[in-house]
Length: 454
Image (tube, rainbow, N blue to C red; front, side, top):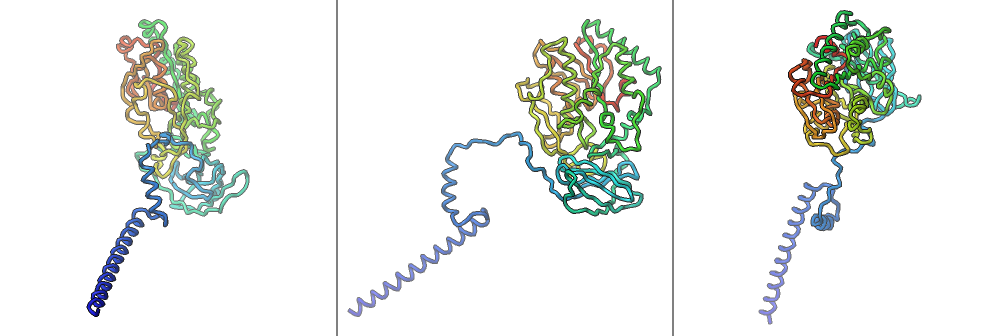
């Protein structure tokens, strides 16, 4: 009996040790699992095991991609109600500009050295142009929305940077609108061409029109002359610069071209009609017109062409997608020495909302979907065919303003030969070979010398 009792006790001890050992292993395993879970999925709660099972079931289901590849219009811009400065640079010394973030629809007032400037913001960004005669100056910034003060007053010590000497100087206008200084001679009427140059231009166009009609009797030379932002928005140019009261260089060259038999698309009138539209005609921090400005010009151009080629009627604005977003800012931010990534401009990117030939969309107009700076792809000589013989053909000579209408122009043509950007040479042998219905020039106002000298 004693032996049986001893054996029983020994068995109990062994069983107890075994159970203790098993419990220790389970606890150790659980701790490793929890630690791993916290490390990889820190937001999991106590029901993590149940969720993992549910996720496993979900993974076995067919995956349906519901993500729209085109980002929707942002409901909330990346700005707050408080004022902050994100850029400070000299424009026309001793004047400098502050660029910053503010409340939506705010008017921002800047005060420094007895100078007081109020400027309307655009989609949460503002700029004020002030004077700095020393290395730095203390600036008082405040904002109102619908006449009501918003947020706190910001006192900021401005130490403007000086852009490097190889930069193109910039004029800081009102309401976050910037201009190249090289636009000023046209704006102020200080570069009026002599009468002899205008007469020579007219004679040259007469000769070219005659040459063109030898190969295509109904062919036409068309000039799309793009007025500068200063011409369209003189009220945003600093008061020290006065707009000419007489005919501008643009006006006189338009008259000389028309006298020679060319057609000039009158964008000054069209742009004045659309200058206050929701979508801006020009970028704020880039020297070019926007996709919308180019669309207005495209409409004017093909309203004219469709009188001869009805199938070339321009598409309506609702036939395109207009993707609004904040994009990396353009060349004028760069020339001010500021960060194009740090200062993002709200704008609209146009794409087709109808089928188009692949040849039209094969070339990338912009460097990326986050930047509306034109790409190198659109600078080269290239011929684009759509295969639609009901549409006309064209040779296009252009500057960088052509990039915003590069694809929509080609889509309305059977054949479009783009000369290399900034090449305005009249090549009679090419004219004879192509026999185009139209020779189209796209030239910015500040680039009009290319017409006088070309």
